[in-house]
Length: 254
Image (tube, rainbow, N blue to C red; front, side):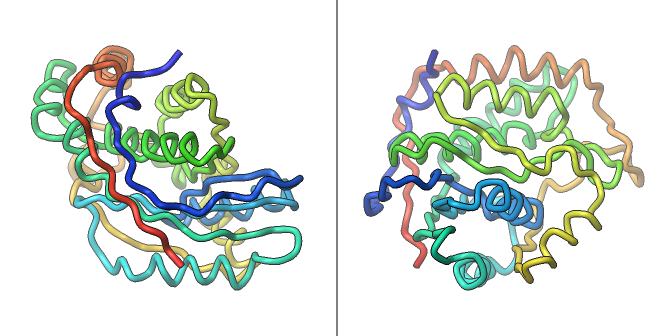
């Protein structure tokens, strides 16, 4: 099974051929602390690995984006060796796909489910682009830093059934999705993983941060039943919509 959204995406990328070897090949999200911890966990479990770092830039994120280059160099300097190879990174703009999936008109459609938040569809954009990159480069595995709890706090884009929804798309497209920190709740435990190797990570903010909590609390303002219905109806339909081509420009991070 496939989804029409992947047929509509034009990925502009000129990436050198990823060498085939006995090493298992991973496309890795390096967008934040949890993502870097996930890369560490994977290379510990698969010590003979080829890792291609990836960054999906979105207009809703703000902060010092030069950190991405520092994190990439940190990965290369600390992890690159005879057994683990850190290849050139990939940087893509997800803004056009974000507008198609999570933008204003799409959010109007979400109102019928009793809430208005772009966060689930925003993360869907990130996963769709990484699946597209992986398939285009012939990479079988993607690493993400998604996790169900954040020191006991839930995020609507990382609820268990939402992560299962993302995984369903990976399975349908023939890509293995690795979530090595999915069950780690404690930020302290994540920090321990990163400190073990002295890794750096990116710290950005999002303009929609915390939009789905009750004011002044970490309690969800949206029912999980409404979220489940939104995912199983609205987002499934969005994946299979016909429409114009969507361009995802990419560059190489060296």
